[in-house]
Length: 106
Image (cartoon, rainbow, N blue to C red; front, side):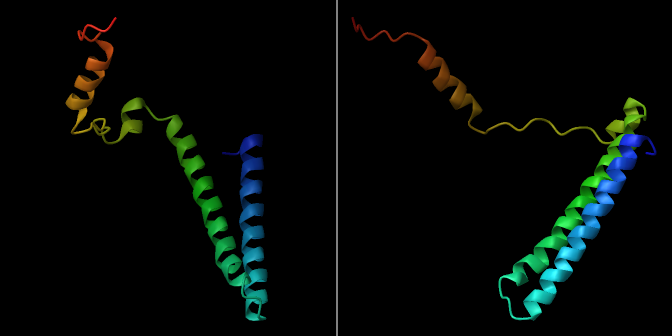
């Protein structure tokens, strides 16, 4: 977490989070001054800041889990792949499309 690329990422995340917070504060002051469209931005910029924090934390967690053994990384087993309840009908329809028809067309 203290390698040069990570330090750059930490700085970038902090700068973005602070900038988004300040932009939200600025838009809130504009909205309170009568600019109606700024109300949307006043809520949007803090959401961007939270999104930045969430991605930053996720990246750090993924990096820390990378060095764990495979068993510890898996945690809980993956769910089985999803299938359609109509899968057999779909496969049957595809099979009839592939087979040549015996209708006597020349």
